Image (cartoon, one colour):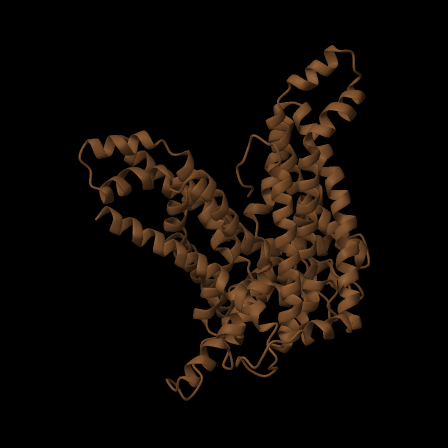
Length: 267
Length: 265
């Protein structure tokens, strides 16, 4: 199983240094051209957009997911199980179908526009779909369960006596949350962020279905290089850079949260 | 003040639940809408479902999905069970390496796994089709099976197996009459999970499918690219309903007299 995954990753790494033949075949000659091509401003722009969308998706998922996870963790055990199952079910329904559901709602003859037009509020349909806003919405929508579950787990495992201690010492609920609950559930937030970030950085389904031609992200370009343009070496180089970038950012995120943790500890 | 805060939190959480479910409910609702062109509700109809069952391409895609789903989940369940048993019985170092490999797909975007498998299959000159799809589905569903069964094994403890051996059972008899019956709910849950993942997968299948091995999600993608239509709504609804049913049944099996009631993920 592991071999089935590690081996091909090495092949992609090797492929990224090879040349593409005239008919889309791979020519076994060493070159750095694929990597040099990535520095084309066109791709720089797409990489930038991808990172911005991924970071925003992560931030919005925390904002949407943390309160929900907090609420669930404060419910009674039996109710908790039901809520958890309700959060989990959409996670199993595939990305494609879930982003398509938004197309029905947002498109120009969609649910919202039809409704507003029938009320006479607008005369022309609003451009709700095929822009970066709709891509972001789709991303947060499809990835939210990834954030809720890890945060819930860390809230569940938290030692609540510390919270009581904070209250006994006169902390306001807000202060207690900010100085006790939040730092103690950092692991959950970090895990959730990594899951959301990694999934959104390579996502091509949501931008493909909900984004227009202008909102292509790096996942779409890679998919294109492999399946339509048939430039496997360049596609490989892009995916290697994507992978290194995502690992680097995860590492930095880990460092940053670790650092603030030790600071909390010594204070 | 306290109740106000609690109400705000509860309201927000319900809002999030609505956010998660409303689009899905609207999709399902509009699969019964009589109108083809826009979102105006013109009456209830089954006709889009009827036209699906008369569509040969849809039926072919359904058959492909079911065949690939059953074969890949049987293989994934056998391998996943064996792996879980092996990890339990061998040294800690091995299980750490194993666990590391299991988490690898999580820190790497899913698209990479599709690409990696595509490159692998083309390097060994395998023609893309049902066989490559089955291999790919086994690869990504096996870790889930293993996680579920490992959980079950950890719950079980060592006592019963030790007792069986003390009473003179051979290792094979212990496995056959003690371990396997005890972890059976886990095995069934793992199988259902693997089947759901296979039935539902789009991203990885997208890279490793051939022209004659279109599965349901791939067929839906083709339709979605052409635009919104009631047939897509109906087909998506069928996929949603079967996924949800499978997941719920799997959860019931997994929790069946198990001490560990933590949700999976």
